[in-house]
Amino acid sequence: MTATNLGTADGTASISVTYNIENTGTANLDLSGTPINITGTNAEDFSITDQPAATIAPGSFDTFTVEFSRATTGTSNAVISLTSNDADETDYNFDITAVSAGPVSTLYFENFDNGTSGWSPSTTGGFQFSLGTVTNEKGEGDYWYTDNWNNYPSNKTATVTSPIISTLGYTDLKFYIDFRINTNDNKDGMRVQYSDDGGSTWITLGSDTSGVNWYNSTDVDGFANNEDAWTGDNSNLTSSLSRFEEASHILPVSVSNHSNIRFRILFASNDTNTDDVVLFDNIIITGRK
View 1 (spheres, helix red, strand yellow):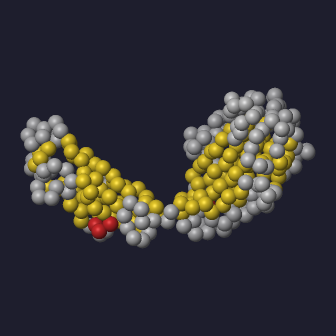
View 2 (cartoon, rainbow, N blue to C red):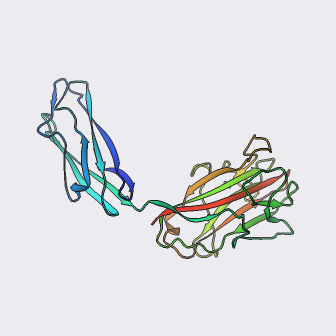
View 3 (cartoon, helix red, strand yellow):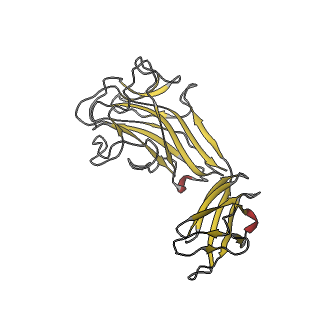
């Protein structure tokens, strides 16, 4: 076994990992003394909460559990060792590591119920995102929707851009958005971009194979050929119910601990059929401090 990472604990919380010891031989595997021992630089941050039996019969296995917890944030490293009557490897060792980090908290939340809060829509030939509600989509207060609703034009784009958001002091960032799409075909769609230079350059966040509920197509021609975005109709619920869904995506390291971050939501159409189009609400960013 190579070095294993037990993971990341929130603050002083503990995490545990269980390992198997399997006897694939034809004789008993006898473990010597206290079967599992922990040594190394930060051995005091790890403990064995479940030792295996002293003898493991041929064709059988037993388990042991390693628990990690430390009083301060940081990375801990140690060595797991065991001694047995195994003819090939009497002394067996492998490295373990784990991290204690600040708990996840919300550093940014906006539900737009009190106005735009610094988010600004662009106008392209009279087509844009508007803030409010539409008659056939139930939401949580106000949300952004493409306007004209139910009659958006072909070959147009619309964006809503965030104010500057500071992530100073935060790492392990994650972006959340509630969205509703109904574009009638798969050529028009919506996606999220971020900028780590205040809006001078923009990078599309994620792909259809990343994140949670993130993008559902790899070829939304409203943006360009073979471009990822949300498209089509995301819900078969009736209009009496909210048809918004939550999506989330881990943010790249480049936007962590940064004072000049912006996001924008983009919609783009091509020259085919049109329909209601898209809505979004509840932008949330979480991270560790």
